[in-house]
Every structure is written in C-alpha cells, then in structure tokens.
Length: 317
View: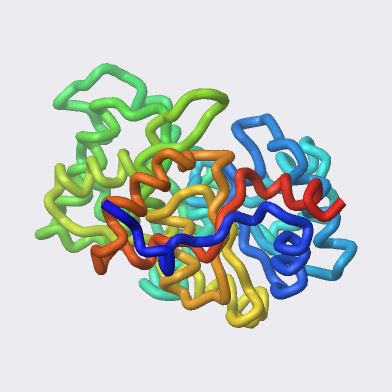
C-alpha cells in the first residue's frame, strides 16, 4: 500500500529545519520517559538542547503519564541529571493531574479519604492537597490474599479511587480496589492516571500504568476519568497555568496515541515525534502504511519527526 506523500511528516535532518523548529515556537511541552531520559539515563544531547532553548528565552514544561513520582520527586531527578532551574510548577505528572481533578472538577472536599492503587507519587500529591490516601503503599497489601482481610472491607469515608502506575500489582490490591469500584452501584469516582500500555526502560519495553488502569476498568466493568495524555482537560490546565499561546506551542513525545494525539487534539501549533523511546521508525512507517486512511488515527500523525530531541543541538551547531 502506498502512503500519500501529503500525510508523510518531514524528518528534521538539517540545520535549517532544526533552527526553524526552534524559531517558530515559543513554548515546548515535553514528555519525559523516552524523550528526556530512559530510567536514570539522560538521552544524549537533550540537556544541551534544552539549555539552548533557555538561551533563546523559550519556555517549556514537562508532562508525563507516569504517576509513580510526585512533582518534588521529579525536581530532584532533574537536578540529579544536571538540569538547572526546573521547578515544581514546570512539571505535570498524572499524580498531580489526578489530585487537581479531585479538587477542581469533582469538588471532593479536603480531608477526604482517597483509595489508591498506585505508588507513592499519588500519595504524596494527595497529602500535599490535604487529602488522606489509603491503600497504595500500605504494607498490609503485600500480604497473600485473605478473603477476611481488613482492607477488603469498604471504608465509607473513601470519596474517590485513583489508579495509576505501580510495580506492586498483586491480588490483594486488585481485590481491595475492586470493592471500592463496585461499591454503592459503582458510584465512587474512578480516576485513571494514564492509558499508556508500555514504556521504554534501558533496552526493555515494560508494562505502564495504563495496563493497571485498564485491568481495573475491565474487572469492574466501568469507565474511568482519564486525567493523563491525551486528555485535553489536562492540556487546558497546563495552558492556563503556564499562559502558553497554543499557536506558538509544540508537543514533543515518543508515543503516537498519547503524546502526539495530545498535541494534535489540543490544537497546538505542531507535534514532534522522537524515536528515542517507545516508537521506532519501523513501527512508525508501518503505522503510516496501515492506518493513514482511518479517521480515528489521523490525530496520531505528528507534524514532523526526528531520531532524538538531543539531535537538535547537533544539527544547529
């Protein structure tokens, strides 16, 4: 099958193209895993490229579907990897987005208990917003399944459920979370921190938070509120907080169905796909060949692509 040339995005491969991409945008939204780093390894050239953006008075924020770390955790990680001047208000992990949704959209009162299936990032952000996380990293959930376990009894003070990334996904956590998702005719709000199926990790592709969220969605047979990419609700929050002009903003990411769709659905000026993370050039070519005529996948086609965002500085220099 031949792909129409009109829908094949250009590759950023020359100094002129790289410079034009920088000059045309005032604001940059960056995914983290697969764009900035792979676990604790900084992707080559990325730090220098972002320092170049700083020198040109460009503005940027980081938006990640990884809910396992709080904004403060991310600030510390950026510092460890050599970044300077990265503050909490520049970072939007979905654990923060979940908390924001609880407070601003669902109007859950402060001081309420929130059941968590996820890691400490969700708990930290809930506590900072004056909520009381229950479940989550509670050691009692590490025990073998016991149908008489105290945590299988629904706490009537729990006002919402947040499900996100965790590597501690066991039967006790599944069963206890299910009790809340089914309770009172499924009336307790169910927030899902992301829909990512997998993420890149130092040569491996590993299950991401979306695999946990969708497991619970299927098990409870109910929908969830998606507070992560590609939700335009999250983008609206970022644009309002940062005061970014959509027409001068670009999304940079490594995943078609979250990052690129996030930028395109949100009507940003452009979206840039990188192959340093979860999407390979081979997969992208296959996607264009098999999906370009499907209406639902058109929003996953980036404006342009590059091997790595770290290549920008090499091209410019």
